[in-house]
Length: 105
Image 1 (cartoon, helix red, strand yellow):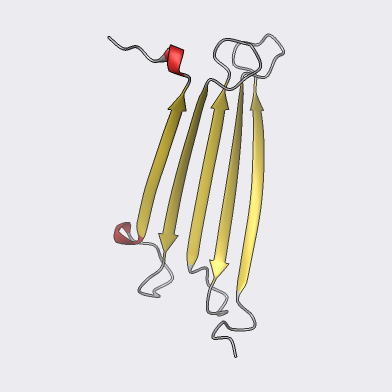
Image 2 (image 1 turned 45 degrees about the vertical axis):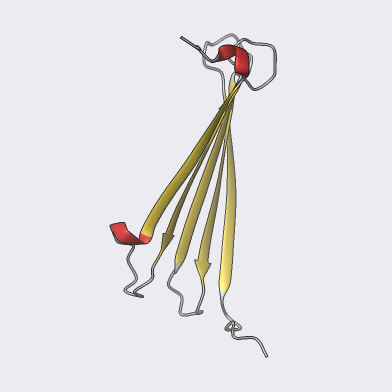
């Protein structure tokens, strides 16, 4: 028997933006944002919110991503008060940059 309520729910949305930074008609960056809303106990109140944004940027115009950034923010309503306080929110991120773009000086 599962400990998960039958009416627990997860809602996921994905939004994608295509960005032409310099106005030349070519996509220079793509940003994808994925949001998860989780009602763990089935009471109708969101218990967990997680949003991940990944941005890929083509710096030199060759059609390949030169810089990729990923940021994930997670909020968990640990105390069950229906609100996310500062101590219930975490953020983490990473950036990958093409090696020849990194200034070693």
